[in-house]
Length: 551
Ligand SMILES: Cc1ncc(C[n+]2csc(CCOP(=O)(O)OP(=O)(O)O)c2C)c(N)n1
Ligand SMILES: [Mg+2]
Image (cartoon, rainbow, N blue to C red):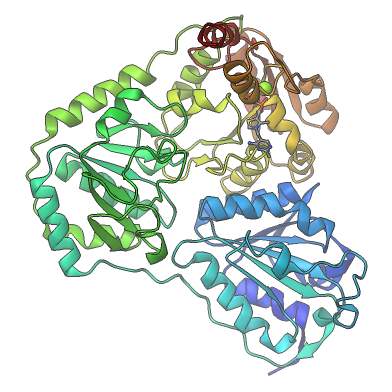
């Protein structure tokens, strides 16, 4: 066995785990790793701020099911990366954040940019560790991959003391690890069969992570065999094709009230946690239990019974759950119910009503729904602009939505950069608000630098719309801190070296989109939406008037 530097051992472990891509903002604290990455075959994306770098890595985790890898420097680099960790936690995404750390001999003096990562990130990560001994790198990296992926996935933080990275050690590489698949017991499946046989109007709800394209195919097959209506949890819409007659809608912010009505008697919750947004502020399912029959299938036993005490808890990953279902027979009695739910969904999502102004955002979304191929990926952060996506877009292929269930603004652009890098032959479309975009707008430079031609549809209404909406509902007429002064985003795109166009009318959108696509450059379509068009169906003035009438 030959001696290697710790930095080389580290990079060799990443290669052994199948890492092909990573993101970073460089720092002097981990120069040796940057050096070892040269010629490693790992595609290293140089980002402009650690928040963007961490979100890109998180998006990689969502897309592949393997940890997204991000390298940042100590102190400010690490704290800048924290939103990516929070997203990975709330979205159950595997991710590993490597942080260059001060030299071991300086520890606890509050040296330059020193931070105690275990204390700082204790609540933001599944596991935080600092590697002091070069010969333990294979052990710790293999464990980190397992912790990030296994059970309920999440982020791991690994601090790398600068001087440790140059130590020499003689150690063997760790083998590639894959997360364990937990499977149902035969008795679980028997009980599920009984519960389904006696169910009146069951609804399946899909969510969470640990899905694979094959598990999703099996879910479609299961829904067909049992004629089950299927709803998707907040920002998990591509877990079931919206074009399938069994899809009945998106269970997120401002869902179809008729969908909510249907989630009553019997619920089959597959993979998700039914957290605050999907559960409509924890009102949809009884806590800790109620008259509802609830079957909860989740890969992590700690999530089973954490909030809801289910009638039947099954500790299984989606692939293992579906693989166990062959034994149970289907005799659905609820087909009429499923058809009615589907009719409600189509009526809710088909034709957007007009909104104030010359730019009809709903018509543009309906156009995108027809124009974009099934494999196009839609990425967004947080803001009211996203409600048009959730309601009117129809996700078809697996893994085509990258959006934070954590509601973190600024996610759409870095996610779009990663989506386009991962899938260069398909369209990556970031849909961003004017507030949302500028939270990580600097990553447009990353897209230009690495020649990643994503398209950004930037919905500029001149306000932090979501917050203005809440202001008008709660403090009508009292506008505080929600007006914005925006740059010319089309000019900004061109200044970065990308393609930029201004869109002020609905008719201008389609040709501008085609030109953006044909340009082969990262592009921004700067779309001006009337600020009155605060949701697909409400105006700001309308909300204000309604609130004034109430008070
Ligand atoms: C990082 C972060 N900061 C603040 C918020 C609170 N917040 C939610 S939506 C929103 C405004 C979004 O504005 P914009 O992107 O312009 O979208 P719009 O609602 O106007 O469509 C704010 C400030 C958040 N969700 N995330
Ligand atoms: Mg806005």
